[in-house]
Length: 434
Image (cartoon, rainbow, N blue to C red; front, side, top):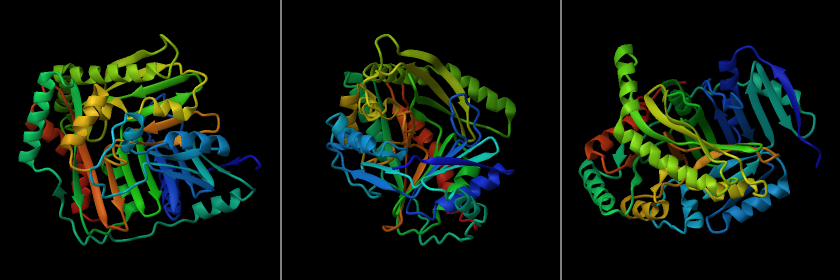
């Protein structure tokens, strides 16, 4: 097959061109639109990156998914976009789940896009086979948003776990921690709406306005959608450098009162509970990266960094290492998955407790979404702060979790979960016309 060719075209208005790319991409059965939302970071490679349409796909359940992915990647030798579901833990950690799954994303899905779009520095690059770049560019430029009104047959938000049941579960988890069964566990709960119809593009745009985040994503696989406002990177590889940036530690913001907002930020920075939670995850990530990196190359580049987003302040640490040269990129994911920030320590025991106390499969939530380049460089987020929608089943869900440690207060953990999903409930209950 001939090489994929990239051709650049200038644009003047970044917000406008992003909207056009999003609306144009969403018309395909398969698309992955990744948006940095102009978040300033030395680690970001693109302002916006999209894989649209598909030349080939790999869709497989957990079992031997990673070996299939390795073969698929080598056979294609091209860009790949796709996801790893949390339930691949049954393969990587021998921890199967028998809980119900109402969204039903595949455990693993990757595709070779027909068209690749990159946006950076007043220039859009279009990558495809053949010489139809101008035709594609003209289509994108002439794309108008489809003005739809969300049809909400139901806006009744239901909780899979009631408040009282949640408090009871956290108290039981605290007893596990006190007995030494584990040190930290990320416990998640599901919120959902049944019998609902909505326009995923308009919901995603509303989410971006309320909560712009550096790992935002609009992801469509047939009739299933992920509308993601994640602030967290799972794993990025650039040449002989790999890094992970786990988030543990969350504080509300007060953007109407600068002094109070700064006080909340400072309070998070010195919080003993959040620091303990963060450092435990850092140790877990260091251990995971040591499996895939050269001896003594894994270092903590930043510990307890405080970063501000639209809705919350977050405590983020950065761990880097030099990956083993003989490992295929898929093996680097396999040997560190699922990520420590969404499990806990020790990982195997914590996964057993997650299965025991949670009520539904996490599915794509707590998994990872991203891209891989032909040279095996890759970048994957952590799928959090996300809406998941199965259009065929008319089922919408979102999850929230927090890290439970010996110092956790069940009520405060519950409040943290509600804080993390407050934007979603606001969007769902207030339909807009776009």
